[in-house]
Length: 621
Image 1 (cartoon, one colour):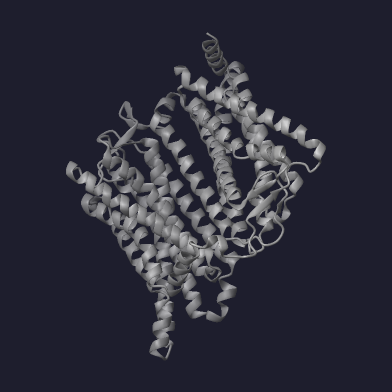
Image 2 (cartoon, one colour):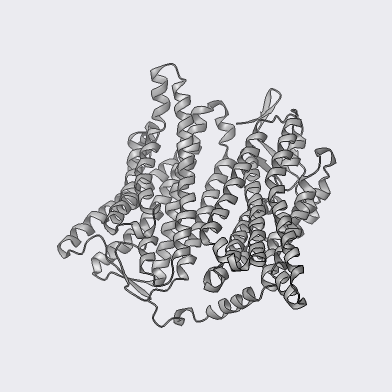
């Protein structure tokens, strides 16, 4: 996909930022860097406090924790790129990067809007129907409201981005803003934007005004109910539970309505930047303070969390600080065989993937997007298998199968990180093949170096955060019963079975978040190959079809190996999994798949075979 410029095309835009004055760049960087840190730390604290205190496991705080998570994502879409631009002379953003930023900005912004509406409904039910509160706002309904908010927001964002992608840009490519927002980009289009404006205004009214009207209706009913309370103290107590939410709603919607609900002709650069800073940076930063300083439960929970940190190791005298890994087999005569087998597989995996990385880095002909992603996949596979196999070999060799609590959490974190990274990189590689086969003339422009860096960096950021969330959720569990893990490493599902405290939140997050992060890239791969298949079927000659499809066979083989086992292990509740099957499936995608990657990509690829031959001949000489 490209931006048309008459007969030519451009690969990106220039972001003017908040100010073009060179003397203001460093002060602005310091201000927004500190605001970003405060936002992330504050909202992470809110999430930790809510999940660490069972008294806060209520619908109101469930929505608040999700609002904090969305605020972190919302501000992360905008501020890091802005900070980089403040310190660099070139403030460019690629066309694809602009659309990606626009998509996630709208997705998280709209989710914030729907979550605020969900919180208003929660307050309406609590005040107007207190006796039916537990029935109406049950966990299933809360989960459905959250899922609905995310789904509607992402569909809306996708439609908006697809609408923007059909516009032509033939004049200035300078966006008078600090990120890719709809209105500033529409101003640059040289094609007719009247239909786009009508659709944008109509759709925005439907998606943003609907939750806003829901909030207004909820508070109208709340006010009527509060006014019926005879005592002043009762009125104050009822209304005080809404003060924090009302403050956030006013901050968020006041600036959003000003920016988006007026004709394009009334667009003002300076005023829009100020209003946008309010709801993209200031509001997410203030949310933790508004909800903690005005809320006794949150303040008490924050104090408890602070007091628990110094003595976390002695907080529970019955806690288990060591686990016993059963391994693949308990038969003593099989241990030497397993040690030799997995040592050989580990060495082959590390050497094979290192050769792939060296071959790609040493041959300039392989410095293309496909091989850049392959090098990253090989690095991820080395990290993936190194998280598990060395510890397993140590346990087999020493006969001591114990693993400390800290080591278990560390292994859990890095296993989740590299497994998710493999998942995302396979999706990125599928997208690369789609562009190469379906849009070969636009390949160099679409898959430019900046786009490749953003795709790889985005994969790292998402997977690091996801792995951290699951690890932090495990830290809140108590382990006071059996300490035997029927697995060969600390995986999440077997670990949840050992907890003597409630694992409901962990199971919910495992199915919901892990499901999205596993299914999302998988759907991306399926969609890419659907369009690839359509493009190949349009090719007339059988040789052309075979040549086009041969570019995908290695990747398809890896996808089949990886997903056929990973989906079976993680997309089902912990109560329904079998330890034996999990171990077999886990060996497939933790050991066999990383080991086969170099063979699949080298034996079926002439370029790789040529590069490996050159590398080996160079080492011999």
